[in-house]
Length: 89
Image (cartoon, rainbow, N blue to C red; front, side):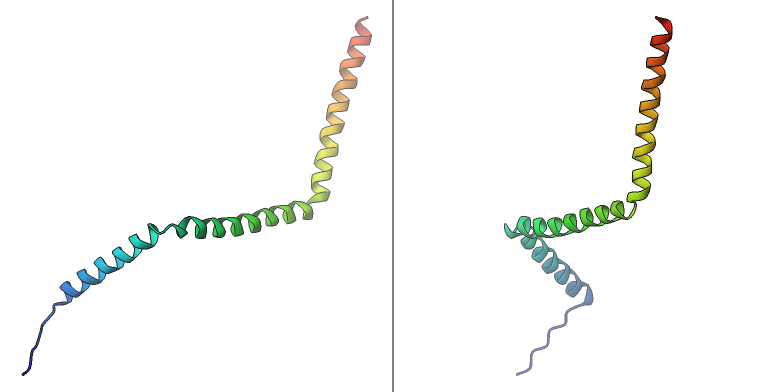
């Protein structure tokens, strides 16, 4: 006895897509997904923060100059205001 079944590529493709979609939906509905996502986000967050800190530490001289310039401007403004106030008295 010999049985032959012919399955078209379209039927096969549709079934594969249906099965893949089912697997993805099962995976997305899994309660562990939140924990897995949290692990990935925490890892990437830590790496990103570390990168930003390293970049800022590498630019400490430039940052220091900006801070000094800002403080100098603020002090100069306060001195100017004080001198004007004393001059008007």
